[in-house]
Image 1 (cartoon, one colour):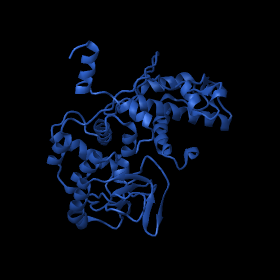
Image 2 (cartoon, rainbow, N blue to C red):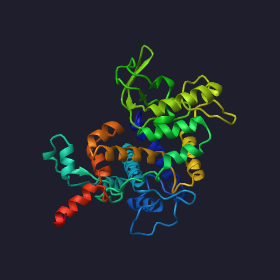
Image 3 (cartoon, helix red, strand yellow):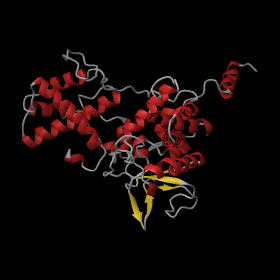
Image 4 (tube, rainbow, N blue to C red):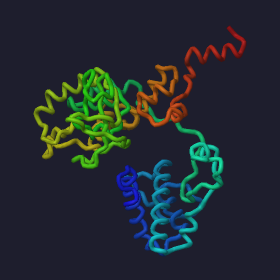
Length: 356
């Protein structure tokens, strides 16, 4: 894990590695004795489709098998761990050679790499699941989810969370990790990064609730003012819900930690609110509102980006900037789908068919 010090991958890889090491203990294997076939068995036990018997399933209910993305992360973690162990300890050369496989570079690999035209090989992971070339459209919120959720939430804090997730593309880790100094909810804030009301999402390792932002751009505190970081524009509804929460619940229960979201009940009242607690609140509110499916924070982010694409006529550059996405190409591939019931689509078909 020290090789990933300071990166968001460290905590994620730690969870996957602990799960694998527990399975390895059950199977009676060690780094010296484990083989590539055993690693394939483990991938099958946690959800991968492998053409072989893998024994008892490892992730039993209420745990779910890993999805495609989680399987890819687990495969990368296992490859990195065993290559590091085999090289530094000079053991299990058979597994080391099997994991150090290579493949021919694709056109995308050549385009991304410096001097890509001279590349002849790329590292491959024999444990990674096969990925399709077509992206699955992300899950959106149910129709009318926002007003339904606002009708059933119990506190001003929960109302603010639903509003802030709906009007931005904030991730839940960034939202629960906000400090009061990160909020510049007025025009012409002294940070100079944005003229309109906005907030700064800053990655901090030492948050009391262990919440952390996924994206980690540099940020700094200059004369008591937060600058840089990941910047999100703030809507009037967000500002209104913020002041309602601050003048009622926050003023009554807040401690001296300086974080935005706090617990409102229980023995830890006034302490920072955790990411898991925010997810649980959304899940319970969705049940009370009798909304289809499970309400997750990520669905708000997808819905916001999809709505931006619809309003702008499918402009991925605007959606990228509004949602703080890393790539306009990815936004276009995932969210740039045509509306099959729009007048423009119907008109194009009528024109091709030769009808008025």
